[in-house]
Image (tube, rainbow, N blue to C red; front, side):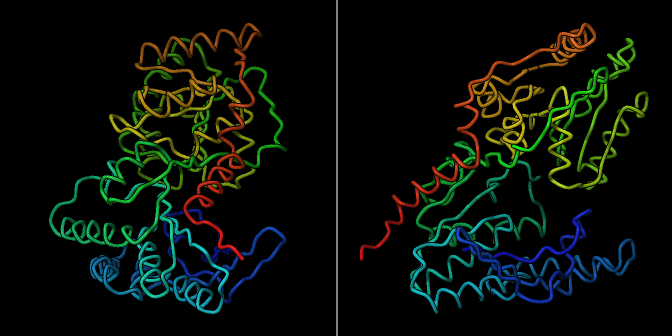
Length: 395
């Protein structure tokens, strides 16, 4: 059984996540699952923020955010989606069939739901870290008032997660960091891939298409990558096409790409968020799929890595993370590792020439290894873990 918030509007900008959605509880039940989607009512803070974009009034929302970030450490109703907790509490109170609860973060304040359910009913729960929280190196160090909030959140993470019987996360590195921080044992469950069976790979006969899907972070060296693309483009490789589906969602990161590709801007497509099926088709029709390492940061595979693997396409990693991304790509036999700009230039030029000559590079993969990264395989691993740590009660 799944309890989640309602998403009845398109998410085309960060502000859309903050808007109210749904008027009533949606209940869907099949032979295999049951889902409750609850209405989401935007908080006063979020309503002010969304309604007053670019206005001085919007600054009021920053003050409310500060008080909200303090209050949610002590008061459940300060969490905008606390109706999820109260609904789950009602279900558990009225049914004896619940053996454990898995609570996913982000948002990590949902871990307080597990803490309170455990405190009131003795409910066993597992914390699902799809990212890490206070051990996250992608977030800039906090200073001033933000440092105060950070101390509160670190205290809350330890307090809430210590009431969990276990946690899961997306890489061994994350698991080790979170375990050391919280004192709770954890297991790696990859994000995995799925839903790729209906895709047809239709590669353009002359264009050489490189696709980078999803979010871009400050620590990822997109400027260096685009510098190499500019070099190749100026040498006559005008067939290079770059696609960034979803990047228009973040104006700051989209600007990084635009500002570093003026000489070949007509060959760069920066797209808004589009349907999952359309994104997957764009990737399936690409010559190369791009992974950008996160600087010196380790243990960050990102969900796109597994989508790339499921498509069985060559994946260009620049530079190497010397960690989980390179290890995974080498394991599945799809990796094109470029540790520096010179290597990147060489591998791209080689593949461009191969395509011009009608002999594109073909990777040989082991299907059983590819399948081990599927969501089906990862779900089986999770089920085996749950059988071990939450034994089904005997009749």
